[in-house]
Each structure stands twice: as C-alpha cells, then as structure tokens.
Image 1 (cartoon, rainbow, N blue to C red):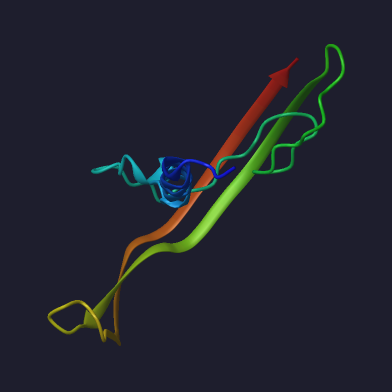
Image 2: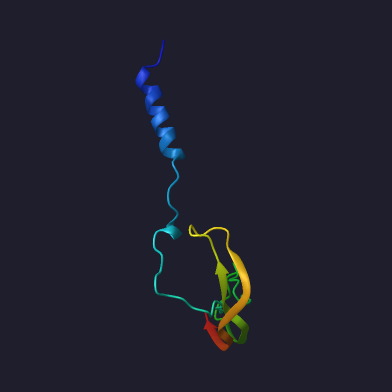
Length: 113
C-alpha cells in the first residue's frame, strides 16, 4: 500500500524547519554605550584559578581569600586606517593613539561556602 502524498510534503516541511538557521542568543541584544577596558575578572573560590571556574564543589564550610593584581600596558589602542568607501581594502599606517596608556587593579576576593 502506498503512503498518502501529503506525508512526503509534511516530511519535507519539517526537514526545512529543522535545517533553517536560527539567530544565536548572543546576537539578540547588542549592548550599546557600554565598554570596559578592564576585561579581567577573577573567579573567587578555593578551587578556582583566575578566570577559570572549577567544576569541583568545595566541601562543607570551606573558605578562601585571595588578592590578584591586574596590570595592562596600552590595553586600548586606536590606529589610523585608510579604507575603500565600502569599508574593505583597509591599510593601517604607523600612527596610533593610546586611549588608555596604563591600567592596574587589585582584586580582593573572599568566599565562604
């Protein structure tokens, strides 16, 4: 016995819906007007090291304290570029401007779990 013709159309429509790319969640909202040169944020905790948050769970009533010094030399630079009107074929020349020359911070952390 032969399957109805509409079942092939339904399968093709479902396959088309599955293969249609969807926008990623990170592409939904673009934060405008927000910019931070300090990109480093330590992960507090007894099993964490800098920005990597560990998967290990601490024991009962464990704590930690830490001090992390963060320093950057010229973290935000602006370069002159000559581009075509459509924004392609850009050539960077040697002139630059250091918008932020130096930046330093001390991150004091403490946890108790």
